Amino acid sequence: MPDRVPIMLLPANVVRKLGRRTFPPVMLLLPLFPSLKGTLQEIRSEVGVDSFVTASLFSSFIYGLIFFLLSFALLSSRPITTDPLIFSIVLGAVFWLMFFILHIYYPGIIVKKIAAKENKDLLYALREMIIDIDGGVPLFDSMKNISAAGYGYISADFDWVVRQVESGVPEREVLKQLALKTESEFLKRAAWQMVNALESGAKMSDALEGIAVAVEEYLLREIKNYSNNLNFLLLIYMLVGIVAPSLGITFMVLLSAFSGLGVTIEAVMMLIICTSIFQVVMIGYMASTRPDLFGG
Image (cartoon, rainbow, N blue to C red; front, side, top):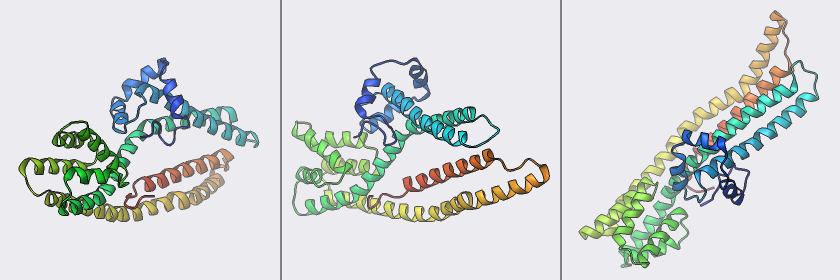
């Protein structure tokens, strides 16, 4: 698993080195994120929570610095009443805070993405296991085939199971450990079904068939729910991203005719910045909630 989140600007080796030094601000921030340590463990990151928070502060500061420089360069080239330095500092600080919060919560997003990818890959892995078992292949050999079949996180999980069994751990105990450590609800159910089938002597393929049907129905529901939500999200996107800027400028022009304040460059820039941020957030939300059924 990667030791850094995709939006982090610092490489993994730098993140580890930062954790070797103790920064007082980081020690004050750690109690604010009690679940972060467990989340990093769930994504199997080797980076400690103190290293991750430190790296998040530095990475988000770089983002804030970029927005500060862009804002200051843009405002300094235009005659405005507001001090461009103060406005740029405030804007940079706001983006620093926003990106820091995003860095902290992004491992939780990764956990959900891993569980979603596991559910997608699990359907095909279960189908292959059912065919193998019905064809007379032992369960261990079937799991070994899954570990080498390229089913993403599912193959990695079963590769761990195979290595544990080959090292001498009983098959049932390893499957129980898999059920406890995975974030995929359906993989948990599949692992417990295999344990129950091994202990009771029930037909393994029948136990796995029920899980495969449940996964397939779940994925179809996800697609339907996303399709329904996407229509509403597109409506909000068009209202805020297209209609709101046009009407906002129109209202400011009308109000300036009565109040005499005029339409300042600061007001127009704030409108552009706010709508741009909203559009980026909406696009990111629509992309992150898209069912990862076929990958990509």
